[in-house]
Image (cartoon, rainbow, N blue to C red; front, side):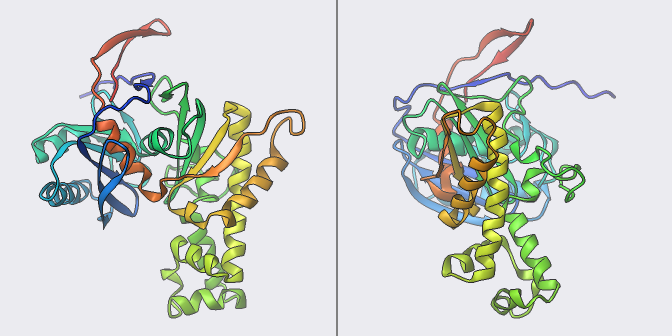
Length: 353
């Protein structure tokens, strides 16, 4: 039986910056390695947060973890709405994750499944869009009408905020910057291609490079190996970031290399989108200037029209790794009526979160 073709919303439109509710909302951020949940008030303040490891690639197991987190936090707080930020390409009108590179979601009716399990309405958003929305509403993006938010973690997520709306493109796939091919024939990506940007400028990339150095028995990796008792397989991007911040030379060099790749990709995005601001968030952004300074240098070196154009600023996110769940929670408060629009001669539905 042939599967019905999904209908994607062209553009997600949001209300202005006026408060959309002061009640408590619960946001869930589902990533490749962790599931984070937090209770958020109407000002974007995080009241309580819990984290669990993502239970492999099993969709049902991930849903079970979400239910556990919602019930635990809901038992201590008067939660009025629930928002989910999930990694992947999705049809937001039907609440379906069409494909996720890091989880086993293929045409997964995530919103329907969770509403059934939780017995309450659930709002679904792309995780990077949720983080970008949070930074625009409450963080580093306040006061800017055009910005790009990048979340660096297991991969690279992206959000485009233009004139008070998050742009998702004609088929709901805009912002998947991590899968631009930056090195043809390079490292294999979980999306199926080779040489994707996130294979060079993400937390996973940082961990992989450090493990390869350790397995090569390089003396430069001595401190890295000592930190994991000689088990190279236990070296992660988070560990490398932590050691870099402590001043360990090899870890700092590895973070700087990732920063170089980050800046190159940002220059490509500036050529295409010309935003005023790039906001860098996600777990890897905890490296701070160790990551951002080489990124800024590589950006300036590779920017098209450099010297003859205004350069966008590159700043760290203000909300930290919790931006995704803060944004998901805030979006769950937004209730807009369904309205019809016409785009490229095709009638489509546009519904706010």
